[in-house]
Length: 217
Image (cartoon, rainbow, N blue to C red; front, side):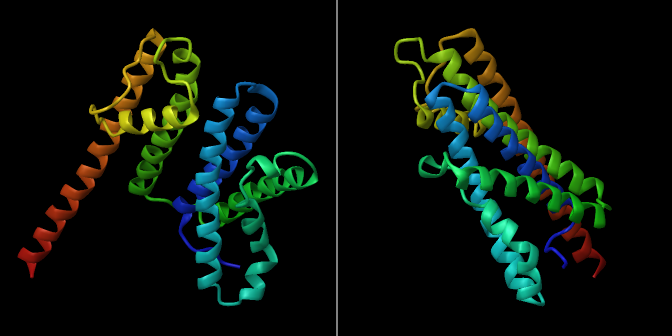
C-alpha cells in the first residue's frame, strides 16, 4: 500500500501522532486544571481533523480501496477525538492504542520514503515550531494569568490570545499582567514573525523563478 504524500508529509503526520500521544498522557496523568485540559482537547480535535482528511485523501487515491482499508482503518479510528463522551472506558483506551499504532504506521511509511529536500525539511521545522509554540503558550498562559483580575481564565480566551499573538494582531488582544505572560507574548510574536518571514521568502523566490522562466522563454 502506498500512502499519498512524500517523506516530509509522512514526517509531519508522525510528529502529530507522537504529539497527540503526549497530549493524552499529560491530560490523563499530569494536568488537573480543567481549562488547560480543554485547551489540549481542542488541539487534539484539530489534529484529528487532519488525520480524518488524510484518511479520505488516501482512500480516494488508493488503487485498491480494499487493500488500503486493510491498514487504513487505523487512520480512521485514530481520527476520533477524545471529547468528553469518549474520555473514559474501553473505547478511550482502544483509541489510545490505535493512535500508537498510527504513529508506528507513519514511521514505517517515512522509512520507505526517507529522502527529503532541504526546503521540505525547513518547511516542516517552521510549521512544527509554530504549532508547538501555539499549544504550549496557550496552555501556560492560563497558569500565569488566571489569578489576575481580568486575566485570561478560559480555554477559549487562551487559544484566541495565542492565535492573535502569532498573527501579531495588536487590536483587541488581551494584555498580559504577569512576567511569565509577557515572556509567552514575546515568544509567540517572534514565532509569528518567523512564520511570516519564511512564507514571504517562499513567495519572493517563486516570483523571481517565474520571472526568470519568462525571460528564458
